[in-house]
Amino acid sequence: MTVLSQTALLLELEPVVETNLDRHLSMAKEWFPHEYVPWSEGRTFDGPLGGEAWSETDSTIPDIARTALIVNLLTEDNLPSYHHQIATLFGQDGAWGTWVHRWTAEEARHGTAIRDYLTVTRAVDPVALERARMVHMSTGYRNAHDEEMLHSLAYVSFQELATRISHRNTGKATGDPTCDALLARVAADENLHMVFYRNLLAAAFELAPGQAMRAVADVLADFQMPGNGIEGFARKSVAIALAGIYDLRQHRDEVVVPVLRQWDVFNVAGLDADGEAARDQIAAHLDDLERAASRFEEKRAARAARLAAR
Ligand SMILES: [Fe+2]
Ligand SMILES: [Fe+2]
Image 1 (cartoon, helix red, strand yellow):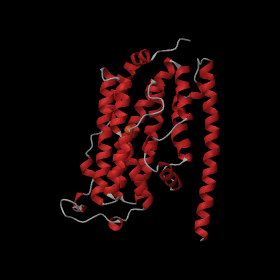
Image 2 (tube, helix red, strand yellow):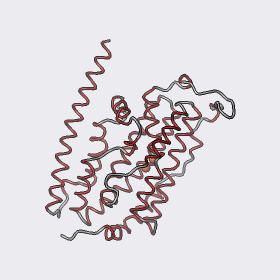
Image 3 (cartoon, helix red, strand yellow):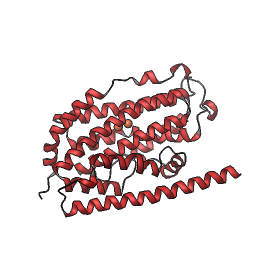
Image 4 (spheres, protein in one colour):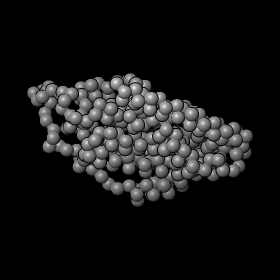
């Protein structure tokens, strides 16, 4: 079986990009971040304008929701790095280029909308948030397989869905209907992004099944959320998992499994030896995830029981 080069893959997938770009544009609904922000709740801050400093008691949304909102926003903030990655890999010409720019434009409103909401409602410390943004963006972002087309497509297929779920559950965790509505709107964008990338990789499975399978296996083996470079990410993501906003069970059952099912990976024909080996790795990975997710759920239940008994 011939191995397709990066350039050949780009060329072969271009018509699929075109079709799915049209699909995306017909499905995507225009929306306006400013309509989701309760501006009349806002007050001037201290500093040059002499308003009131932020205080913990300015907002009643739960701590864990604040943590998740910060992680989600910082993740969105790193858009310049993501744009650089896909513009370098997919190029800026033709349908690929149109997608790169359109996707970037859609993503940019996520950070805008969430930051406006957080600032106006005083949900989080704006000084700490700004300092965290500076640190995070100064570090930049690279995904582990940023020079490989199919690996990148596989990564974003999972990552967009993961982000969708994380936004959605963060919205619920705030207990604030305004924030919930905003994050539901953002999550709807992420879902369309996921579908776009997932369809592209589905086409790659027809074009180069072994290479596509290898990409999926490699990406799942070292999958990390895009915000993993955020200061204190490990601690924050444990808290987020304990709260059920994004945990291993959701990662396995609501992200990895549904996407694999769409590609029908266990029935893909025409695999070479490496493709077969990759598929075995995916099966083993699903078993590992199952064990890890169950273990986490048990620990979380035991912890909840301990806390209840206090
Ligand atoms: Fe986003
Ligand atoms: Fe997205």
